[in-house]
Length: 331
Image (cartoon, rainbow, N blue to C red; front, side):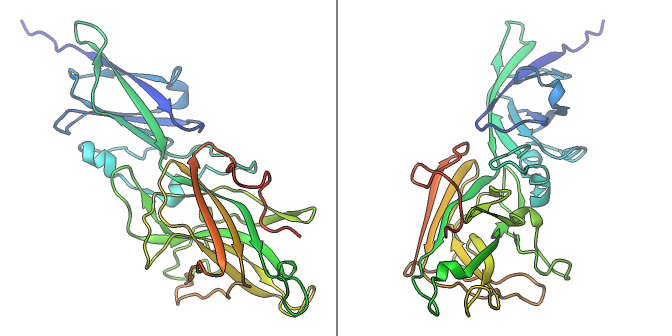
């Protein structure tokens, strides 16, 4: 008599480290040797009170590993996961990661990708037919916002320098072009779309704010925050937040010239919220581009400029040391 192999089940309890809506969950179950036991993608409707129950065609053990990815693109893992390492190293482009994360309301982080894992399972009954896994998931990107930006220039051709600058956009540059839980992409990209469409162009519109709104003498930030994967400080390709706009060197209402202020951010870590505050002491510099239309930015120095980067928990809307309202210029 041939006995059928027992069918086990796994309850995965998903804990969110940030207040980000979950639309899709992919769960990978792997043996301690890394071999795949199950990979399953479910839409949000199948997640009951942050718990997913997976029927298993093979017996589970306490040493199995569970990997969870939230908000990956549809079919992202379809047919390409041969083992645990393949799940970890599956790279998501920056466009895929940020395709649905922005909304008109400031601070919305809808559908950001999140990842977490558990290295052990807990048996829920003596027969070993039901196991549970507790998995905390965190964002795979850092959030970056500008709490304050000001030009501290008392006089320029007889007028206050701050009155001569019209901010137009914020963008990130030297951002990793892809991300995964297991490795960091070495290729970099940017959010300067000035020369979109040129061969070799590496710009992505998801890395810029697409405008700044002027309200009652303040230039308020629109469509922030910006997002970036983890990024180590690199003296050759430092991560920067760039304030772009127009400067009127001959006076208010006169000819405008494009200018930019590249703010160095240093190393950042996914799952954190970085608040930027900057007071700059000059009029910026004209943007420079290579033959493919990609920007070449030189970060502002620390002698004439005060730039503060404060790391806070991901869900913190404002830094406790920043003004109560986000603005980029105050007349």
